[in-house]
Image 1 (cartoon, one colour):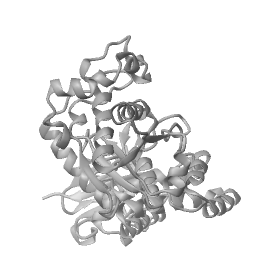
Image 2: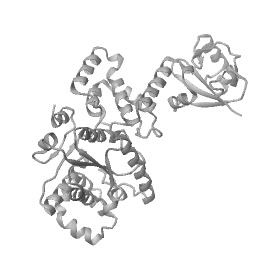
Image 3: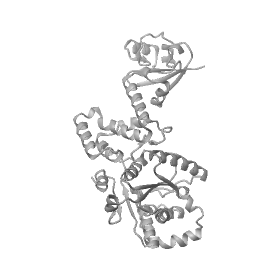
Image 4: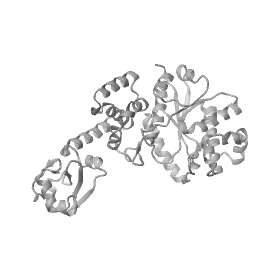
Length: 411
């Protein structure tokens, strides 16, 4: 399957600029760019679909430029509802370095990473108006969807002019690096076409672009959001285990679509997985495959295997197979309790509200519903000492099937 057809099959092309884009992608080797503003020191899972698409183009022989917006990040891309908060230059610089390192790692150092601050910082206001603003009609900007949606609530000149700065980025990369195509999420369509317009008017040449649909879950929420929080690509902000848990719980209705978007598996491989998945959905083969492919691509095989080990051992109750650090990663949201050395179990249960009373504690213990470090415990007078704690540090107490508590012995 040729590249353009593959992108279409995966549902990765929404808007297209350039009549012979299909030929460019299939038969030529061109330079393209994808950009993001450094609003945080890490990209999140929502960005990953764009990065995978850029990587897919690179694998097909096209040259990727990944732009981190040190200049545009100081302004802020207009949002549909309200103005973004201005972030400091120091924060932008810190975020920019974090993202540059992250992108370089994802592309194995093979992508060219640029910062638009480098060619924007010395552009005087008067020169910008003469060299860029003169070529773009105000009515043209007013017709941009995102601008129209903000007119009723109000939009600052800074946000209004954002599209000119990004358009100038495309113009600069076109002239300096023969970059003829921009690839972004569908919310950037207006900014892509501004760049194409500038290139046409100033240089008399054609440029190209396409957008990818925003990736959503079945409820219409952005992919990669967990309880209102972004799932970061930085494993120190979102562990591989947390990423695994999010992906393994992907809804059946969306999972094949996500395999197309987020993995480099072939059409034939995905169709085979879909067939097996539909035969026995409870095995979650497709979800497990998605988790394996994404985590391995982002963090490597070792991190994937670590996430899988933590998940399987916690699910099976094999607590003793895990290190304390693994347990802390896997049980990040579990309530933590500190006790004194040599407290007896029934007091630990009652004093820390794991149960409501000694009577209830005895009921749970007699029913085999209390476990310590994966082993059922019936003795209410069990002494909780460091000698029986995991690595002499930690107990994992489970009440019933799902209630977990992390118990450490204080000084």
